[in-house]
Length: 423
Image 1 (cartoon, rainbow, N blue to C red):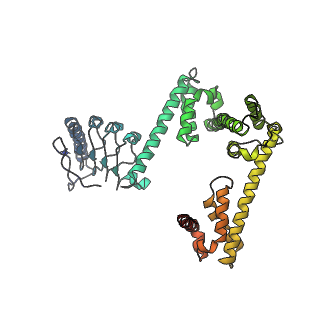
Image 2: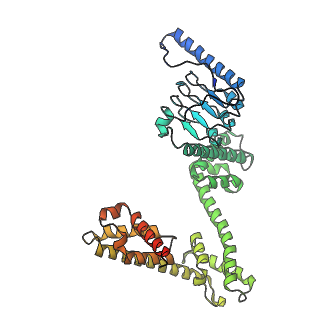
Image 3: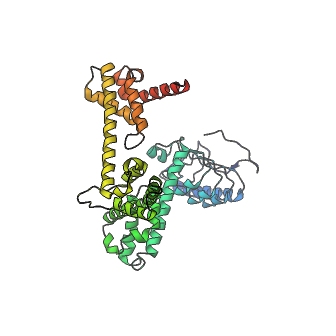
């Protein structure tokens, strides 16, 4: 934690009563238990009064008390920047109202009983330092006083996920399941189904899109979701198919522009739509369908794949050209990997097992890849790497195995030096 300051623009740090370390407590006696309960209640009352009295404070010290929770009155401290709650061994939770402390930067929670943090903390955009050392939370998660940004982002993701869940629940209750939402089955099954769907989608952007399209994606009959996990899996499959269909439509527009550019003044614009339709449609029982990745590949390599004469374009012909070019680029990649393997085995590692040397060549080659299929730049660099293998690969084979990045970095440095010299 940063060193604490004792001054602010409104009269300094507010110290709110409490018990300094060093006091003794005899447990097990009824009278002592009663006193302890009264002390805790008094601590809570003093803390509430402290917060209400100092709404303009930017630093509040509630350390060394016996707080069980932080009073909701914390919401009134909109100027609060530093909050010290350390050494409250009974403090088990923070209120959701802490989200209203928008200026909060430093939060000391050391030696408390906190095992979880409210999801609303993910909305504190200015929070730069949380100290959770010697807490159950730190013991369970490994988070202590480091990576506050990562912790806040993790909490923020949980917050967004919970907000999506609540919005989804509200939409299906008031939408597709409004007729059965108040039935006994609806009250039990709808929340179960919504939770199963949220569990199925780990990506928050995808989950947000599910919320937007609830009426299209959720089964129209609730009885179809009596196995929530299975229903959520089907919904995920439907979502994936729908998303790919929409992306295909977007790519169709991009492919149309590419074709018009290739066949400028040669092809009638209205015929382009028919060409694309022929590429997208086929007898998939006997032929492989173009996936989204293949369509991206087609657009990127259109000049190489489409014939000079647009009259000869056919769907099966273009699809065959796509598969053929992909296979050719895969073969080219394999060829340069084999060259690298041969170079390092002959010059550096002749006593090593060929399979082990090949694994090194592949690991290094992976670092030069720019796309799913070999690019011209990748092939050129790998050929140069093979030619100068002894300059870039370490002499010790174990080093080559443990750090394939070293060969690539050596190659990049040499390339940069050559470019600087105009070679």
